[in-house]
Amino acid sequence: MTNTEQQIKELGNQAKGELAAAQDAHSLEAWRVLYIGRSGQVTAILRGVKNLSEEEKRIVGKEANALRRELEELYQEKQERLHNKISGDRSKILPPPLTPPRAGGENAAGSLHPLPLSMNRIIEIFSAMGFIIADGPEVEEGKYNFDALNIPLDHPARGEGDTFMIDPKSIGGEKDIVLRTQTSPMQIRSVQTMHLNPPFKLIAPGRVFRREKADATHESTFYQFEGLGISEDMSIADFKDIVAEFFSEFFQKDVDVRLRPSYFPFVEPGFEVDMSCVFCRAENALSEHGESKGVGCRICKYTGWIEVMGAGMVHPNVLKNMNIDPKKYQGFAFGGAIDRLTMIQYGITDIRMFWSGDIRFLKQFS
Image 1 (cartoon, rainbow, N blue to C red):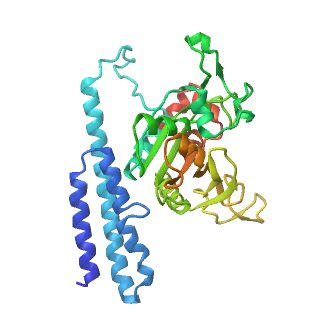
Image 2 (image 1 turned 180 degrees about the vertical axis):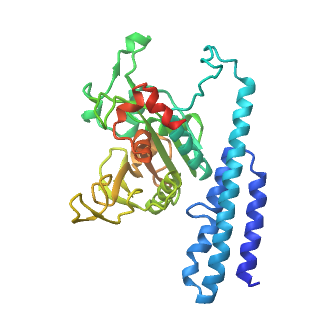
Image 3 (image 1 turned 90 degrees about the horizontal axis):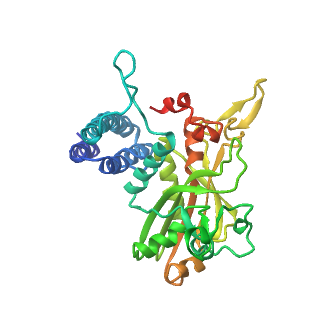
């Protein structure tokens, strides 16, 4: 047995031992990322096979692939056992159903809505990467929704045409009150209320509201997740690695990301984030008539890329509003729509389906 074979065997024993010790979804997800995720230890061995001699490639490739398959099977079994345990624990504390049984004595099984399913998945992935989970109010003060985020007074978002304004007298106050238009206010609130000091990373998922005319891709109510990372040496490269890891874990495929320059008041520089298409992998595609259309598919509009979020390096003014010294610290911020990721994942073409209440649609996710 070669040294590399022995290392693979020892890594397998270590992974199996830690998997057996995992007792909840958080520790299980952390285990998956560590060993069989996109940047996991077993994956790293497989990626390094190309640098070995032909004889080593044959041996190491075989052993590492066998270990990966074994760990993936054990992971699936553990995940199912934990799910069944959680379901069983919940059934002990839930009250009996209030609805009468169906004909034949059977009750219909309920299921989570696809948006909470995606939100829970996002929380699990970022938690495993060391992010703090933050929360905040949906009815927000204007100073948090606009002022603290460096959004100027003449910005269109501050007008009644884009934002749901609330009459402060209706809630017994005089402050500028709105339904939050983004999850970004939780950046400031979380740092203040949780008394966070750099370095830290946080993720804040939640519902937001905008005066949008509903169509297949727009709704007045939808869900976002906001990310923030601050340290003395946080860089764009750090951000890019983190979001590439996130999208790869979320879609369970290797995903690359690219950044395009853009503008947002609360970051400098700012950029749009595209991920490589998880459907076509940017392979050559053919039109209905058989001629080549270059790379891509209909989902990515034959570009090989899908726009998924806005991001950037936190603006110095925003850091000051957090009482963080911009001369000493820097960081990234990003925001994405949970509805959009869910649409991409399940191939949903109309965002209005999430709010339709159509039981036929919802049953697909049970």
